[in-house]
Length: 268
Image 1 (cartoon, rainbow, N blue to C red):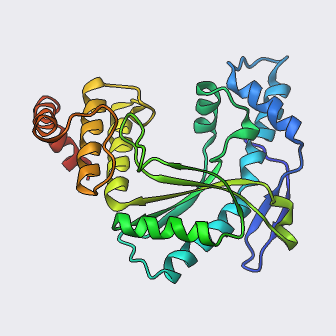
Image 2: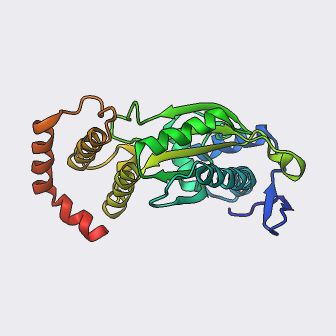
């Protein structure tokens, strides 16, 4: 199921990138197939193999634009003279397990998923985040077709980050990839620490805390801590979360019930 028939191009650094050799209609059909339950037998195996070949080739074709945009992100950070406490995380392509989960969860086609490729900048302060976001608004060789400011308007569970959604514009060898959508995430170290903790606890518990599913006490704790962090950074709190002393008291109560601080210390 992991066979990915494709052509390749190479950049001067001898890095080979797959070219997409299917059509958008093929992508749509493959996405609909993988969003459902797959029953493997002699009658369906060829169809399932083909669906995975197309579905794997599509995100693979985002590798070249993702790498180019990642390099440009690093250049912008350096040009602005921004300090990087944790640097810029490696760019990544979305895993097939995550793609299938997203296809099942929301009613969009595989060709419409906007974060098949992405990269992230982690910066010390909110001022740095805003400077970098503004720099993209002032100058970007690609098309910024949308953005989500989850810092100004945090998600209900507490997730905070600024997402810039770019439509790649390429020329020469990479012109083939023009139109690929790459997401750039910009966040503070504090916001990144929170997101990492959610993923880590979800991993050891076998729960999709990141997706808002799992133990209610853990979900509530992360929501409250995110709001506490937001106050520290002079940002908007999580919608509906208590403020001040009641919030901190509930955090303490949840910590005693869950042993949360000890769990996170062990994870670190």
